[in-house]
Length: 274
Image (cartoon, rainbow, N blue to C red; front, side):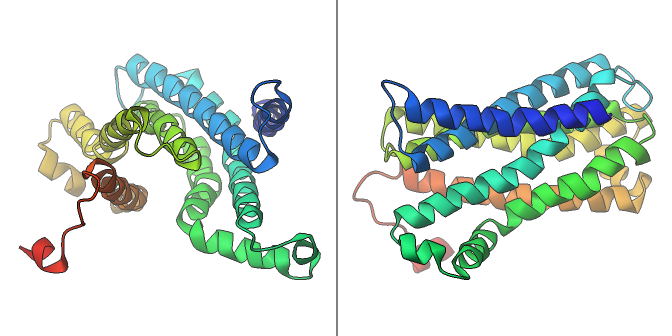
């Protein structure tokens, strides 16, 4: 366990550092530091997502008995990936910091002024509070529960939860395209559609599927499953699903703006109530 955790602590920050250096020093790209930080952070997130979803697919398809079957990759990847969530909090802050500087909110003197870093940090926490909270819960709650509380049971469900990361590369690509003002390109629209579909299937509908899978295993109809399992399991599922629903709402709102014809005004409040 310790070796995998240490490996994760090295792999993600090192990948980010190498990518930043490469993007800044590549003979063709020659990105500025803020651009390199953003792109490198999204690339690392995409790599982690591909690894997590691949591990999740292997685990979930290997466990025929959804309660008792075990796969070594479930606990191994969980231990390796925990440092990613810690690293990503810092990477997101670094992106916010450079964006703050690029927008001209602070010059060199302001950047050195006492309290300026704390002001940027407060702005970051205000803007990314839900994501930071999500990452903190993954480290402080989900990781101990998956390693200790499960006691080797339910690898199938853990594998399915890892597959929620399928949507992450599309989210990351969308942010990169927005950074380069490519919102109206065909690539951005296709990516937006894939992001919407993957997020719906792998993050929102995932939870009804898990209930259905347990119901099929236990011989229960879907509507009876919440009453047949412990209340704390329902509470945990609800807490995990809630931010996914919020983010899905934001994605849908962005998709409406993206696919609305240019020059078409948004619907008036009266129209939206009909």
